[in-house]
Every structure is written in C-alpha cells, then in structure tokens.
Length: 585
Image (tube, rainbow, N blue to C red):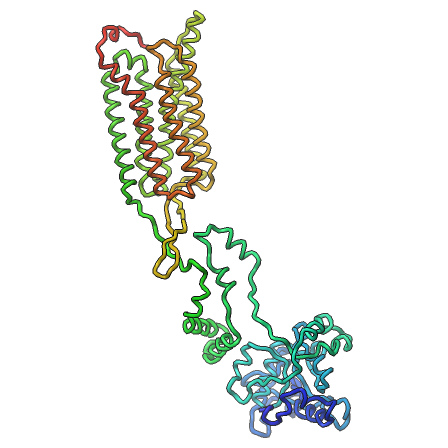
C-alpha cells in the first residue's frame, strides 16, 4: 500500500534529497518512527492503558498495559498491542529543513547490512531509531515493526532479505514487500563494502565506508553447510555400507523459487507454525517434486540387501563329507581296539592312538559345524573342536616320539632308561589343559560370534540400484586370538617335523618317522591353505570359505587315517608268532 500511494518510493531516484529538497520532506512525513508498548501507554494514553485504547479508525491499539520488561520493549503483540508510529524531532522538517529524515528499520550491525552507506551516498534521508549501534533492531523487533505497520497501515522502509518466512507471510496482500531499486552491484562495489568491524564502530565515519560500496546487494547462491567430519566419516566406511547422505547433500540443489514455495506452504497451514507445520510443508513439497529429487540420488542407490542362503550344494556336500569322515574315524577306532593286542598296535601305544582318534573325531565335528548357518554357539563350538582336535591328535604323537628319541639316544650310550607312562600322560594332559584355558579365556573375553560380511555386487535391483550381498561368518572383535591359534598349530607341526627327523634311526618296529612326515606334510598344507583363506576372507564369500575349510579339514582327517592308521591295521591283520610275545614299551 505504500508503493501504491507514491510510486516514487520504488526507486532511489525518487527518494534522494540531493536532486529534490521536497523528497526529504516526503521521506520524513511518510516514514514515521515505531513506538514501543511502554512509550505508547505512558505518552499517548491518559490512563497508562488501563482501559483498551482505540484509534480514530476504531482499531484496537492497546488492550492492556505491558506486564513485564519484555513486553514493554515490544512493538507488536497480537491481541494486546498492535503498534504505533509517530513523528519525532528527526521527522520535523519545519524545525530542521536540511536534517530531517524518515525512519528505516535496519538490522543489527553484525548482520551483512549496507543500508547506512547506501542511504548516505545515494542521498536518501533516512535513519534508524533502534537500540543498536547506528539505530539497528534485532530480528524479532523487525518482525514486530512490520506486523504493526500492516495492522495500522503505516508506511515502513525496511532492510530485509529473501527467502524468509516474513516475506512469504504477506505475499498476495496489500502489505506485500516491494523492493526498492538501487544501483546495480558490481565487482568493484562488492569489494568496497564496509566490514563488520566498520558497521559496528562507534565512529559514524567508519560506518558509512566509501562511496564505491553503496550499490545494491549482489545475488547470492545458496550455500550448503556440511561439517568437515561428515566426509571422513562417510568415506572411512566400506563402500558396501557407505551412507549416500554426503553425496546426496553435496549434489542437491533447490532454487530460490522452490524455497519460497516451501515457505508459502508452511505459512498457509498456520496450525502449528513453529513445530509441525514446517515439517509438513517440506514433506508435501518433497512428495510433489519426488521425480526431480530422484536425480540427486547418488549412483548405485537405492541399494537393497540380499542375504546369501546357506543352502548351496557345496555346503551340503561339505557336511556329507565330514559325516563320512566321522564314520571312517569310528570304523578305524573299532579296528584299533580290535587289534589292540597285536604287536604293531602295542608298539604304537593304544592309549596314544585312542587320543589321536578322539582328536580326529573332534576335527570331524568341527568340519561338520563349519558349513552350517553361523550362530554364537556354532562359532564357539567349531573353534573349540578344531583346536582341541589338533591338540589331541598331535600332542600325543609329539610326546610319544620325544620319548622314543630319548630312549634311542640313551640306548646308544648304553644307559638304562625307565619310562614312566604316568609322566607321558601328564605331559599330554598339561598341554591339553593349557589349550583349554586359552579357549576359555578367548570365549569369556572376546567370544566368537556371528558377524555379517557385506559385499557390493554388480547385480541391480528393480530401482537400478546395486545389491549388497550379506554373508555371515564367525569372528571375534580382535584377530589376535585366531592368529594365536594358528601360531600354536604351526608350532605343533614344526615340533613334530623336528622329532620325526630325529627318530629316523630308531628301531624299525618303533620308527614312525616316514608316516609322521607325510601326516605333518598334509597338516602343513591344510594349515597354510586355512591361513590363506583367513587372510583373504574379505575377498571370498563367507559361506564358500567355510565350505572350503570344511573340505580341507575332512581331507586332512582322511589323509591321516590313510597314512598313519591304515598301514598299522593292515599289518595287524597279518598273523605273526612274535606278536604274541611282543614287549609293550
């Protein structure tokens, strides 16, 4: 309504007092100064607002006096105080024909405002009357002043910005914001702007700056604020599980008009303006523009997940092969017990053979559990069976071969040696107990559990996003535990190799170096392959890795039975008279 009353006010040419002295009077008479609630009650009314006050047009201006200091400083409060504008000495052109001026509502000096140099160098006779330096007002007071102007139909000159909710609120009304034409901005002008330090200076000369910085505000592109840690937090994550948020925020663009449309929907609702209305406006806008927003979705998104089933034939095959190994171990165990009194079995020590077979049985159970769907129970049980299985298989062999080497070396020196089997069994028991304690500590402090392994595939879902394959495997939080287990198994194999080499000259009936070397060689190959699978676990599908490991263990068990037990059982079936009178070591 101000612009309609005088079109000269739409341009700085119509406002400047340097070309037309009447313009100074026009500005002073048009733009009066807003008054606070306290000022109005104490100065304008006769009863300090104890009774409602109405103006000449019948508009309610003040329904009551302010209740506290906060209300005293207000320029508008709906239903209680609707504002008042009055001329002051600054507006009196009769008393001050060369210094009178109109009022401009300017923001505080810490905002990016250039109203003071613009008014000074363009000759626009206006000045702020706020409490801030150079007459600036806080944001909330600026909104109150405009609401008061709209209610009382008073003229106001504002320094404002877009997009903003206050602008949107009055679109389509007679109080709609109208921009005043100022000289266009240039690079030289923007580089000559006053700084915040100058705007907030107590010296008026600092606040007006230089004439080159008095042009209109330049257009600004919207900036997206992204915390620096968001990039690192995003790209430190494996690609298969990387959030698309950073790339989406980086690429999304919303125009000035689109943002104003959101603000308009926000204000039109007027149900819960400062809470759910804003959220509802954004959701509605997104729903209406979903097609254009989809162009900002990062490549390979939206992704979907595909859980790899543990129903592959290779997994079932591994379980069947492990079950066959259990049967073979059972058959060999029965045969060993049946021929326990033959010389070849007695020389090999039946108790140690039984322990070795129990170890092989444990390995069979571990090989059976490996291809199954992982759970915390199966993960822990598998590692217990495998580690105890290798211990029960190799430790008795090591202890027995070490005893034979000791006996052989002393016999060559013609020394009498008495071997106590109790000491041999105790040695085996101590080592097995140590392994058990290690497994207990591992289980208590950092138990194996089912962990998901995610891999980004090249397969596409129905939305043309990539599919993330999920496999489950067993792992602890720290890889140190499994590394220690592998090192322990490696030490067993190295020790067995050394002892097998040392026993090569032992009497043939007791000499197991040949078979032991082949068993150790098979174990070493299997252990090496298991370590390779563990090191490259991120590159191999977890369920296939488990199936391969199960096949390797089954092969290891089968080779041990064939290399170490079958020749003994074949020899045990040959009837020899000396087997009846053989001496038990």
